[in-house]
Image (cartoon, rainbow, N blue to C red; front, top):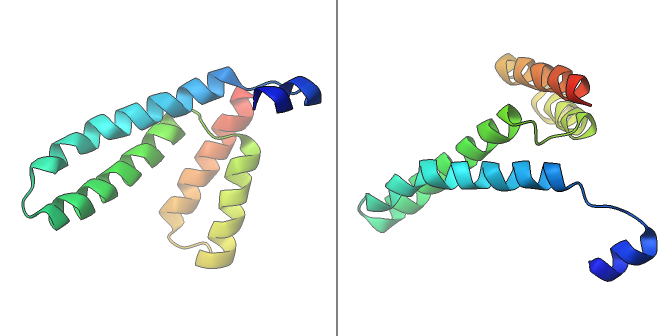
Length: 103
């Protein structure tokens, strides 16, 4: 990575990477109590679901997604889900407005 960055002249977005790491840490803390569930398959499935949902919420709340990222998700929502559920569409609209305001 260092070699590619050196020759391309590109720079990493350290603030964005730090927000992504913070989202992962928050999601892990939320999902950690799920490990106490028995049997293990329930803990695995429940923990995975909680981790995914917590990461999605944290990443939107902390502004980890760019406007183009959200635009891609909006296009997938329209193409695959035909705009349903509408609550997801409203959430993506809010996230897009927020990302444009932060940019």
